[in-house]
Image (cartoon, rainbow, N blue to C red; front, side):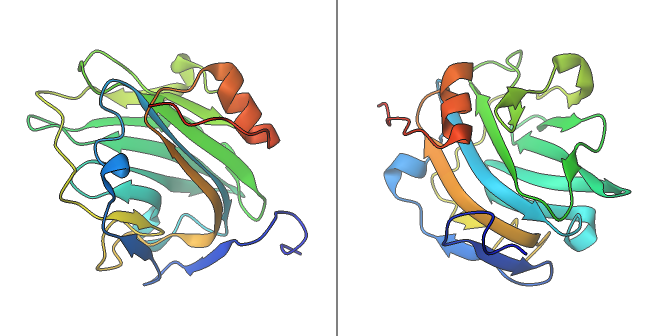
Amino acid sequence: HVANTMPQPYYRFDGSDDYISMASPADLDNTFDYGGSVGAWIYPISDGESNNGTIIGKYVGYFMNVVGESGNYVKINFQHQFDGGNGNWQSTNAIIPLNAWTHIAVTYDNGDVNNNPTIYVNGVAIDSSDITEVTPVGTRQDDSSANFVIGSLTTAGDWAFDGFINGIRSFNNALTAAEVKELYSGASVPFKY
């Protein structure tokens, strides 16, 4: 029973064509320049459309999704687009349970292709040895012209999420491990600019 496990509102996405899109206010543009963070509560039912259920993102920029369903779990994936080749970081193992709420967060500084994001699951960072990486090449793509989309990669409904999403947060700074833990535990984490 989902209704009592997370505070409302949460949104149900059908894994086919549901999404929420908004023309990005300036504070959602280029979130990861000089360090930024995003997070959300997710309740995946499957790995979504085409095995790529997008949680949040900006097409021509970045996205976070669930992939690779195995048993009752999925992998978490983060991709950031660069002009010479996209960076991609994915949990090596399927670690996000299906049909349960999980908090996920990513902190990242896209200013150098040698930087790696930190991906958190329920307030704990995934060890870098448990992440499969495709190193980016070139310069990060400017995402200021892209809509901020929840539940799908694009406004055409591509790679739609199958499940529930709640508590989406975006920060213009790279949260510390302690701040991500506070975000997961429900404490208020102040915005920093």
